[in-house]
Length: 201
Image: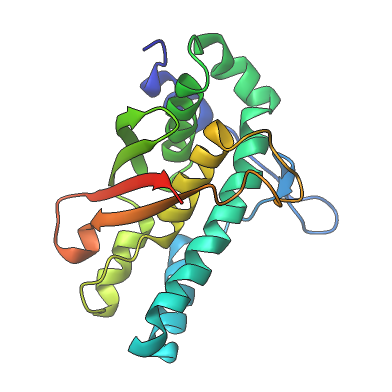
């Protein structure tokens, strides 16, 4: 594999994004934010606590779906950005597999999760492991030990959508949700890492 994960992390972690005169942060074809991870953990925690056990599956779907839509559009913006072209594109030899590995290095560089591909069966299945992801901090709230890495699940599925779901569709009507992700282990569940399996929906 030609992808130098550490070089990507070192380079992309130095990128700064700034707000404009309207207080918005346009970057990578979307508007990004710089809110702390605790904000998103609090949001997910309040949602899941209020809906109760009978609606848990529906609540998880909403959180994962939000992350999948975000990951799809932001991911496309990242892999078509000037920063990507300068840092990652020169390393890409095999498409789209090297692009996937590069995307997860960027994912790690920006602090969402120290996450990497462990196994990849092109067009079919991907196994990820994640360490130090911000969603593992939900343990501080005393939540029952349920897998809670909704963001990683959504973004991982979205990256597979971009790789194998067909051409990028700005409307999201095609290409999006061709893959889904199941969390099989989690730091928030007492495991040493998070583990995620992405497969066709």
